[in-house]
View (tube, rainbow, N blue to C red):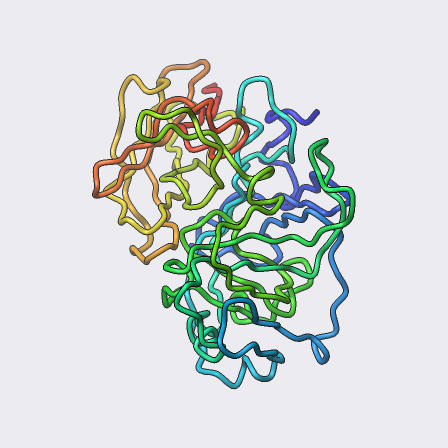
Length: 361
């Protein structure tokens, strides 16, 4: 089993966490730009990457609609397009930092990235099909398919599919996208077309999108009820199993890295990124003593809806020995990153302050 100590400054930019299906972690953060290059963006797959001919590809839209339609890539590109920056984060990002590391892809800090996505607003596509009044959710299905590995699973192959409530899908920033950072999507990132749902964990941003189905009842598919779910306590009732949706408030340290040696008396820039589901950030703080005292960091990039913000704090360590660096973000609604992982989240939603041990020499 991989250990977080394997993540060091000398590591390559990309780490293959699983070969089949391909799951790749990237080095977290380019300190010079809030945009993550496509070649340094994490790759999360549940099944083999499908081979798709863009010329014959179609997006089928049906279910509770007045006019079922089939659109080609050229049809989509003929519609008015827009570009939106947003963070995509795997719901298991940071899993290596949990006690007794659980099963699942062994992500360090690099299963998150921020890119500029170009495509047509989903609501414009839906307008062509005409949603019926009783439609409540949309199910998005990708071309990738296979049999899940967990014991509780269907007997036959399934496609990757997730649903999103109708009110979310009608937001203007939700895109049917064909470009990432100004370039056509690569196969690893969902070519020819993928869904982008800003403010939600990347499980909702279905790659290799082939089918959209409007439904009138809750979707109970495998990736909605078995995978990517957690326990929640609501209204004093018994805990309920609910699907993972919106990104939690979070910050991460990109530098220094785990177990890096820092020379006493020399300046060390501690930097990283912070993000939310869309609520503006209020600030980021840094601690060098396991959270006993905190210091205010400065933002290095402007606030943009759903994009992360880079930040830094300059440290000049004096005391030789081991230190524990931590960062915590807060938003304008008064939320702050928690100090510990919520066990109801199991191996998902790792939003607590993560300790980065370093040595001052």
